[in-house]
Length: 449
Image (cartoon, rainbow, N blue to C red):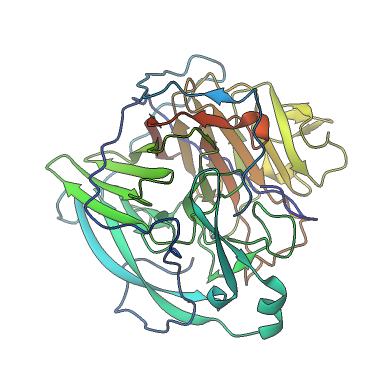
């Protein structure tokens, strides 16, 4: 994201293993809001506190981009299937198995719970509109009025859906954009994602004025249909779950309305694996072509509440394209720089960063990217099919980044993005033809090493 007068957000996440690209099936049984309706959004005035939650609360819209004739076109009616394997240097790491916990329990299961989160009272300061290009509703924030009100946060209960196996407990918040909020490594009880202690508007997002906002709630969000964080990180998503003897899955979707872009995300957790797969799917049910951006954004710390200086990033590319940076030693927006060594600095080591930096990998053909926290010994690897999911972006704040208005406790995280597009600019948009869909499957692997 480009930060107005402040940095952009991007991250680095890791996942190992080969993945298979398959089309997701969506059973749309529940009603969804039409574009003319105000989407369900979390109401900051709710104060009901749930029963003790299984999830720890220690803990994250607007005019459509200009159409560019050079945009990537997705074949009409196509739902691609790919396979990919890491072939380039550096070689993707091999799996280090994590011992399962010893307590007796089903190997895979689904359950629902509640969590109490501190929420800022911003909902009544929102104005809702509809993106003409995609039919997706979005909200702008009257930041001046919100700041002038100076109201206190309050506790609000959110539904939590868990997928769990011997190694991982995954927690989803359908009411907060359907995000994957936590992934806890059970043997060590470490959460790999960042969780903000307060749900509050930040200044980061698609806008460049006082209406700009985004919730840096943490976890993994689904960023669409425009660049940056998109529009749908704070609205209600529908979901269904499924289990069998070998796996558990959740399918989340934003809308069934036939006059707007439709999105579904299927996440599957298998027995005996410290890994999960994600199968996102975009569908254009209308008779007009749509220009879209679609990303998965993971906000990570890899086992600590705030980003450790011992974090390491591995992007298997020799050059990157700068999204934005506050480091005056580096090239500016849309310029190319070497990776990882630039200006005699090794940017794969977070301890060498000064301030914020966001970069897109120029070469993603290896089909994987990873990050490692040497302090917690947690490593995360993302593997993906680069023929369709071409985008990899890394963002982190750097220790000198002064604006901590997105949180209440000065905590930091890094972002690892992956998606359909290779960058955030209009020339990077994809075109989804009428009645077409695009889908792929990627895998995220957690290692302890």
